[in-house]
Length: 449
Image (cartoon, rainbow, N blue to C red; front, side):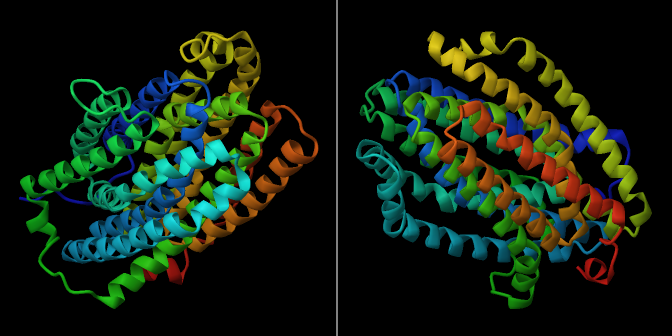
């Protein structure tokens, strides 16, 4: 007998879903840190350059993440409604959409990106960044297929299967980083670009393992994943209606981060290196938060699909409690032992003096984020993703004004620049919480999705 796709709102159910997601997020974040340690050995500025290129790639990754979140909510809603056979159709149409987006991303990287980078970075950084991106962007189709399986697995309460594809991708990435960056064991020494080749190959390997796991577990047959290859406009339209606001939301969010990194680059290599490290630490220490956020999206959609709308706020409160509680365990050591952590990456006194205040600001932002991102992803789960886009647009406008004034006009320290994260997450929290509390999400439009 097939396992039911209907979820409950108990703490055990929340943890059963969120812990495998946490592991799936933890492993690649650990991989990013290892990658940075490798690049740091190539000399000053390489971590900073990887920050510029990494954030650019994140723009396209975020587009896929937005589509993934929309798909995840739709699949979970169908599971709660006992409409399993529609899951395969949703999945196949999402693949067609992402492959089209990947093609556009590759074209833009070879045509538009050089114009942007040449005008906003120094010549040495421009050459290094574009050489890297011309390689790295070819991993985009594999990344998108990988993200769509996330939507499928989490949306069907199979988050434990995330682990295998993640492990395959991460182990291969670390191995290929080492041998291609430094030219070990007979491999060519490719330096900075070696990280790009390693990432593309690792994304391909991770994608293969994931689809193998889906077939082994019988999910292809149960949900009819590959039974119909026809393009279906009505299903595609449903996915786009749900996901396009999220795609725009995550896209403008990461574009603003790229704007932030470009402004940071004006302060020199050390400021850029510090900011790249903070970005990595932000992701690494936010793993449980993002796992609980993905859980909130899926569980809210599933509970609504079961017709249990009055229990949604109880569910959100429980997820917030778990998210903020786990984040406090991270917040305390970051506040009281920042030097010990930063010494793992750089022992230079000037670097430490500049980075410690930034890390303290980041730790406070992570604490606010532990509540804000749960609320925002719960809005996604309700189905009214246009509200997500509205919240993000207002927040990003304030964010960009702040960083431009503080970093470009007032020329304040990098710690003040990173204080923009406090503004960002506070705005997200206030607006998303007020929307959820208002009950306006329980309307005819969200009932029809």
